[in-house]
Image (tube, rainbow, N blue to C red; front, side, top):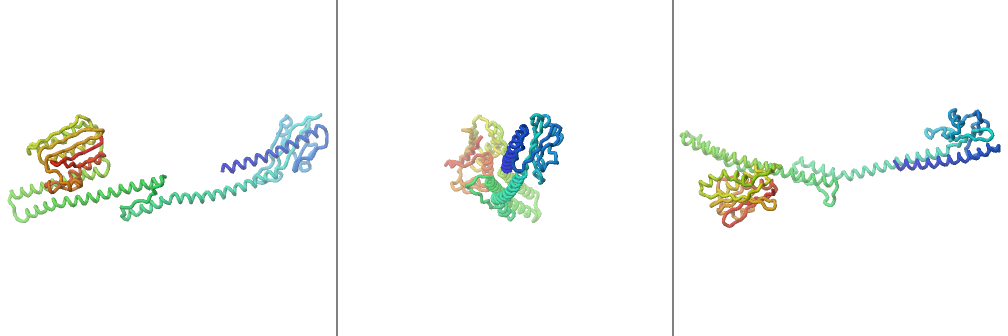
Length: 424
């Protein structure tokens, strides 16, 4: 649009300059004739003239304007004062007849005369109208072509979006393994959108998998205590029981209820740690953290006659003690329940990494159990038989992962050693 306007302005300027040059040249020749009293020379094609006396009466004039005053009273007064007047008569659009450009000024030769010259603008206006028509046609064709190209370009650019939309619509049909086909050799907004959607689909699938796993784990582990409770109650109701027998049955049911509560709490903790980022770090004195985590287990260790020692560096760490404290407590409880001999809790910070280890002197982990030691509901049956749920180490691993760290079991050959490494 700017280019068309510039072209029109340049052509109009050139045509106007040509008209003005013709007016000026004709005016000069008339001025010489008026001063010398010579015959008025002919002007360029389409030119007109009027010679006015001091009172503004036309003394000589071209035939087409013999009975027409070209100057208005105001313009005549301006010329009498010695000014040069130039203006257009008629308009370019809409089309009018007898379009002129006139120029008038005063000539002094014996007595003052006022010379008015004019040239017709027909050819100039016709050229400009033709130019406008051509520019309008060109602009229209350009707009149509640009619209078509823009439409095709937009369609091509948005085609991946439509493909993403169509693929994502299949999620409603239960296709949770869907991934969008995103080009690997491009890096534009649409490609980044595809990667973002794939990342979102990964998280949705992981969330759905957690839900399925939670339901499966809960149904699997809660079935046994519920079955035992139902059996105890059925036996108790089968025939009249003594007060002692009923008390024993209630104690057994209470133990199973406590086991159900522990399982539920452990599963909920694992789900909370795995679903979103629930870690809130704060500065904690490391010896105080370990003391709070270990103290509840000291009486159990004393009753079993097993030494429980803590070796900690006197440093401050930035962790979420709400989760790390029970994780360390789980490790100590596992060592006291499944291990043997003394239990040692050691903690130190090196190169911005907190390392916490819990070591016992029991039979340790079987080699084939180590790769799945931190899976849910896994137990080292060959060496560690107990009534545990198999969620303790899974919880420890979830806490380490939530902190951006790791948890692993080291085969020491003479006991079990669990190590936590957390960036602090």
